[in-house]
Image (cartoon, rainbow, N blue to C red; front, side, top):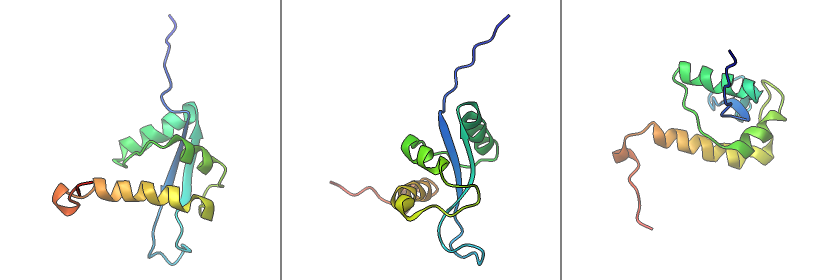
Length: 102
């Protein structure tokens, strides 16, 4: 019997950010990357340990080109900052970040 498993993710990257760490120059670091089946493994590992997952294919693909345990380059600061903001907001209660009318 043959099983067909559809891969969901083409690219994934895990980023850490510790602004107060002495080891960090202040920029987020790439901790783990994967493509195709390995991308699914990266996401599964994050979910297993309760680490939030934000889907952003273009940024994940760009982070693939950064070495492991390397700080992200300045050209990716804005994209990663948007992701960190989403994570921060998702961890707060709605009262902590009210929706503003447009």
